[in-house]
Length: 289
Ligand code: 13P
Image (tube, rainbow, N blue to C red; front, side):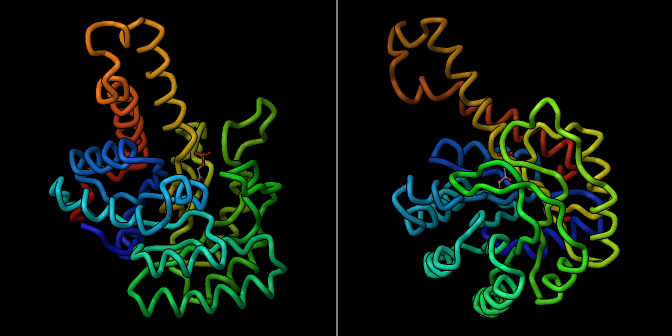
């Protein structure tokens, strides 16, 4: 069931768990994530970066695929189709394509411009019944070409952006996209605590979910994080399982070259990863909570 992310995230924040955003790249990714969410009766957010949207030939293709798949698989759990790190123009494209949620990443603009553009997009999104995420303080590392330095967000700026009526707020707290380096200092819980004190019931978003240890994830949820984004970890799981299949020569046995067989171990690995994350985030069984 395609819905905006607002209700599922408000419930997660109040219930002290988090909903996973898993980024999609193609049909296999989408199917694996939807089937796992249904199996575990968990709400879920499908994240689409601008690069992945382009790869899948455009946001209209993505929206049509997700809507049709949701229907044909008989998915009953709440599913939000969300633009990840959207540009101003990308947000408008996703509104037109029929996404149910957008993220406007204005973190690289001066705060005044981020506020002005976010204000405009909040009106547009809400008029369409869509939810909207804003970002303050860039997330470090690289996400599909979007590069951030990884600073900690200013809690006062977070309050200013939260007050614009956004439905969820991503704030940098030392998190980065991709794998964490060996000398990573960990999440700044003091910053997160200060942000939550300023933003109250606003669901907070933790980007860069890949590789954050379980105890830090749990602490972040206890301090108001209600949405956690995972991308790289599913890519690595898919890659590892596919590599194993080929290295074991399974593609050379019988009809092992059939793409449905070749991609099956990777698809299963994504399902296992999504399951592990949903259990860690506490969203299992929360579809109708
Ligand atoms: P990772 O690729 O580090 O899991 O981050 C995903 C993300 O934050 C998407 O916005």
